[in-house]
Image (tube, rainbow over all chains, first blue to last red):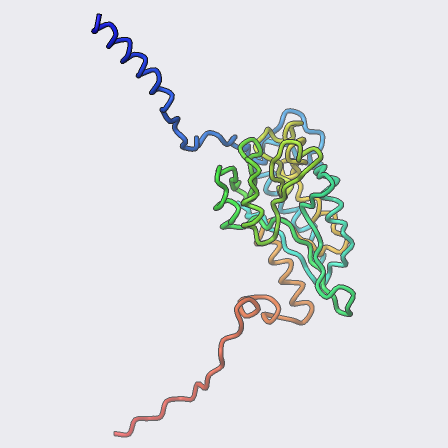
Length: 76
Length: 208
């Protein structure tokens, strides 16, 4: 009988102490959503710059260079 | 890969606030938040100068350093963005930023979620490029459309330049040279002062 009481007490104590446990608080590196590359093609984007389609890195960089020089009034 | 930067030519800015309006319209930024704003020095005095200010997409961004939940990230193009799903809206980045770029909206589309809001260089956020979810949280993703930020591309006097840092710096340098100026308005000496000119007389010959 004392053995049974002791076992119940141990179980009860273990259950009570479980509430004192601490969850890990380390930031999960995967919490941030990985961003897509800007030249990645999207399903349906009607706003692509004319003459350029998504999915081509070299074409995207050329497009950005052209746009950059569009701001240079000494090069017009 | 390009390192995206903004630069504003104070000699050309006429304080029209067109960049501010373009940004708000393009990204659906609510009242009370200005991702971009025009600051005028000596307002009302002859010779006043204006400059358009937003997130400068720092290479060593203090907002990234202080964020307790590490929600900021830098794209391969050097654009500093943040993930609003991770952001807790604590406002530390707002205090850390020397330009006041991250702002804490209190109402409207962004504010309802209690997240910080900042200029995205019109590059959206981590959601799929051009998606409705991205547009609702961050605004337009013009970079993925092969375009540059709306504020810079629509600037009527071309005062605000945005794009590859090397290219916009070259454009600005050309302007400075065409104004008959040189390193006194552009370069190391402007930022850190000119070196002290010391007499460089030839050393006396040692008599033997």
